[in-house]
Length: 141
Image 1 (tube, rainbow, N blue to C red):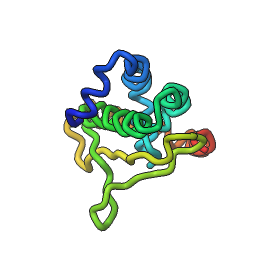
Image 2 (tube, rainbow, N blue to C red; image 1 turned 135 degrees about the horizontal axis):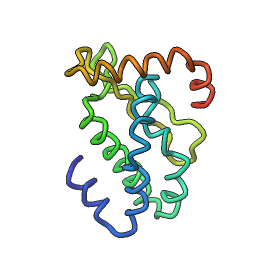
Image 3 (cartoon, helix red, strand yellow; image 1 turned 120 degrees about the vertical axis):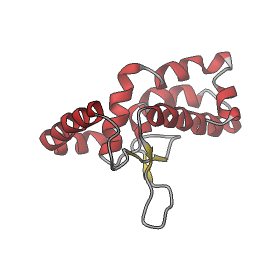
Image 4 (cartoon, helix red, strand yellow; image 1 turned 90 degrees about the horizontal axis):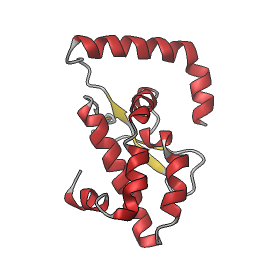
């Protein structure tokens, strides 16, 4: 996260936003949505939009970008990276049922898991995705 985004979360009025985004219960949701090629921000969009709405329009866009950067930091720390298309461009996806957050970055795990724990987690998540693929897709809409 760049200095501008980090400084944004040091402001007192942004503490509730940071608390929602960094909630430990959200991290598995970010990972699961990433595995489904859905922007990770979808996991928190309904909770953060009322907070974002309270900001002035000029600050609102920075709040959205800073939130994305914070989610990116959380996922990067867990071994994820920005997904890229065939041309090397960052992949983005539409965020559904949101007023202010219109799109978000798609994240992916590198092709080679870095340890046995990552392999075990990937197998569990793959099983969940296979079992609940339709339900999760419908919920994401």
